[in-house]
Structure formats: C-alpha cells, structure tokens
Image (tube, rainbow over all chains, first blue to last red; front, side):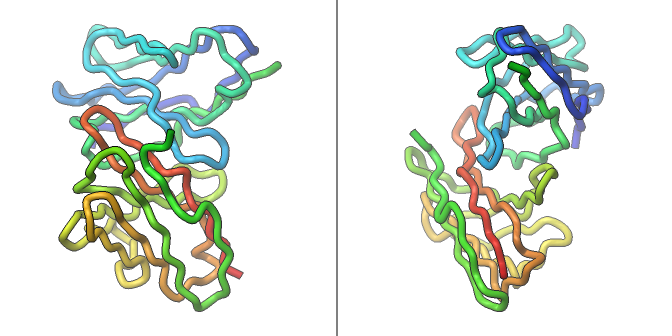
Length: 110
Length: 113
C-alpha cells in the first residue's frame, strides 16, 4: 500500500490559516488523496479529496503538487473546533478500506 | 445528520460477558463496512472488513472467534466482542462508503470491568 507521512503535531493561532502537509512519494496514478479528521472522542469525518487538481469545499482547500508526491490541506481560518487529528490517506476508490497512519494532531491556540 | 449510526455510544460490561455493537448506514446501502479499534493516544487500527451476505475478512492478528461480525443486511453490520476482558476496553468505530467518501460512526467506548 502506498504510504503517507505527516508531521506528528502542529499548532496554529485561532483565526489564522493552517497548512497541513502530507508526503506521498510512492503514490500511484490511480490513487486519490483523501483527508479525514477526528475530533476528540468521535469517529473520523471526511474533509476533502482530490486527484490532480486543487480542490476547494466549505471546510478546506487541498493543494496537490504537480508531481502528486505531496499535498497540503489548508484551513483558511482555524477555529477552536478545528482542533483534531488530521489524516492524509491514499485510496483508489472510497470503497477501499482506509488504513490510518498516525496523522497530524492540530492544536489551535486562542 | 449522521449517515452512519453506531449504537451504543458507550457500554460498560463485566469481564467474561459479550457485547454487541451495531453499525447502520442510514442513507445508503453498504455492501461493505469496516470495523476499527482505537486505543488512547493511538490511531485507528483496522480490525475487519464486513461483507454483506458473506464472511468477514479479518486483519492479521485479529481473532475472528473473539470478534464476531455479522452483516445480514445492506444497512446493518454488528460486531460482537465475546468473552470480553479488560484488555478489550477500547474505542470501536465502524465505517461505510458511498461513491466519494467514507462515513464513520460516532464510535462505541467499551469498558470491561
């Protein structure tokens, strides 16, 4: 399975943008890049996904490098509710089992 | 609203008893569901893949006789922890996927005393 690497933890000030990096140098042409996040004591929730082009939705933006070997999840204005563990996952389809790495634990400072 | 509903949210049971956790897909039919376990301060670990109408597929190191999975309909999968022991205390999470994303239940906190 193609793997991803993320920093263990990051901090952000409230209302400032946050850039969460993910490296996936062994990504294959059919892998989609998915981001999920897990708030404390809850199941994970979908954030965003993309293949080659940058993507935006109401929660975040996903910037994908031209060679697809890395990507960045962008939260435009961090709020306290964004404090969570963020997971970068590679999947061919959303029906594939999701194998979670350690993810990045994001702390938001008031 | 929740697309995948998990029940109960938490349960406390005595050592040696069995506990059943339900996972329902509310808005779509799921031929495949997944079960995860998460210990404190750790990531989710995939336990098994639940297949509607057939046997579940267990990940290496997961005891299939201890963690019984039943997926009798397209909207319901159950995980039964048999003869639970304190080391089975954990956060259990199920998931089901639609075309573009995986949906996760809210999790079940199991405490075995």
